[in-house]
Amino acid sequence: MTVAMRHLSAPDLTPVHTEQVRDVLTRPSLSYWQDAWIRLKANRRALVSLWIVVGLLVFTLIGPLMWRVDPATQDLDQLSQPPGVDRTATLVAPPVTWSGEALTDEEATGLRAIGRADTQAVRLHWDPMPEATGGYRVYRNLFPVGPEKAYGLPLLMNMEKTWYEDRLDLRPTTYYYSVAPLDESGEHAGEVQTIELNLNRVITIDEARKRGLIGDEETPAPGATVELKLHPLGTDYLGRDLFARLMHGAQVSLFIGMVAPMLFVAFGILYGATAGFIGGAVDAVMMRFADFVVALPFLLFMILFKFIFQVEAGESGIMPMLVALVILSWPATSRLVRGQILQIREEGYIGASRLLGAKTNYLILRHMIPNTMGVILVTLTFAVPSAIFTEAFLSFIGMGVAPPTPSWGSMCNEGIKTMLTTPHELIFPAVLISITVLAFNLLGDGLRDALDARMRSRE
Image (cartoon, rainbow, N blue to C red; front, side):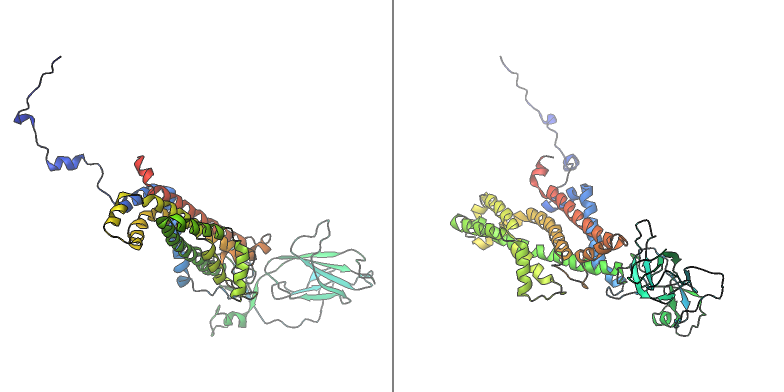
C-alpha cells in the first residue's frame, strides 16, 4: 500500500500574524498570587468572610475613635437597659424626707401608693391589720405573685408602722409590692396584700444639669422631660455602655487572637523548616520534642504563668495567656511546614542551588519557606479563630481577662448571670465571637482552595 505524498507550495503556507495569536489566547499569563486572588474572589463565602474580617478590624480600630464613650463610665439611671428603650426622664425636685402621712382621701383603703411612684421613691401606706401582732413584712417582686406565693425580695421585716418608703435601686419598670402581717414568731398571720406599680424614670434638675442634659443657664420647671444619654446597644448591669465595651473588648480579643498566632506560627515555621531540611537524627530529636510540647496541659501552664507573672485576683491575665499560647501552640505548624519542606528539598532547583554553593539558611529563607507560604497563610487563618475562642473560654471561666477590663469572653461571663432578665448583655458578645470565628474559618477554607496547586490543575 502506497501513500501519495503531496508537496506543499508557497500559497499553502499562510503566515499567522501576531494579532491572530493574541486573539486565540483566552487567559493572560498570571502569577501565583494573582491567580489565587482571582480564585478567592470567585468563592462568595470566602469573599464575604474577608469583608467581615475587614469590618471587624474597622470596628476595633476606628470605632473607638468615633464613639468616644468611656467603657468604664456608669450611667446609674440606665442599668441593664436593652437597646431601643425609652430614654425619656421627667425633671423633679430633690427628694424630701417622708414621715408617713396618709392620703387626704379617707375613702382609700388597703395597700396603696402615696403620691407619685417613680425611680426616686415609692411610698406605700396600708391600713392596720388586727392579726399583725408581730408587725409587718414588705416584699418587692419583678413578677406577678402566683399560686406559689413567691413574694420576692423582703425589704423590711418585723416593723410595726403602717407605711414604708422604698428607695432601693429603683428602675423604670413594673414592681409588685406585697405587705404581709406577722405573728409573734415572725410567720405570716393573715392575708397578704399586693399592689402593682409602674414606675416612671425621673431625674432631679441639679443632676440633669450636672450630667449635661440641660444647660447651666436653663431653669426648667419640674415636670419637663429630657432625653438621657444614648446607648445604641443598651447598657450592662452597672450602666456601662455596651457598644463601647464591645469595641474595647474587640481590641483585647483580636489582639490575643491575632498576635499570638503570628508569634507561634512564625516560630513553628522556623522550627519545622529547620527540622525538615536538616533531616536525620536532628529531625527525629526536634520532632520528639514537638510531641512532648503537644502533651503539655494548657490550663496547668496557664495557672503556672499567672503565678510567674504575679497576676493577682481581679487583674487581667492577658500576658500569661499570650505566653501560654505562644509556647504551647507551635507544634502543629512545625509539623505541617516540616512535611512541606521534606517534599520541596527533593526538587531540582534545590539541588542546583546546593551545587552553586548556597548555604542552609539561604535555601530555607529564599526557596523553601516562600514556596510554603500558601500553607502558612491557611494555617495562620485557622489559628486566629482558635486563639480567639481560647481567650473567650478562659475569660468566661475567670482565668483570662478579668473585669473591669472588657473582652468578649469576660462580657459573656458577666452576661450569663442576668441572661433571663437582660439577655442582650450575653447575646451581643456571643454573636460577635461566633461571627468572628465563623468568618476566619470560612476565609481559611477559601484560601486553602485558592492556594492549592492541585485544585488549579484539575480545572
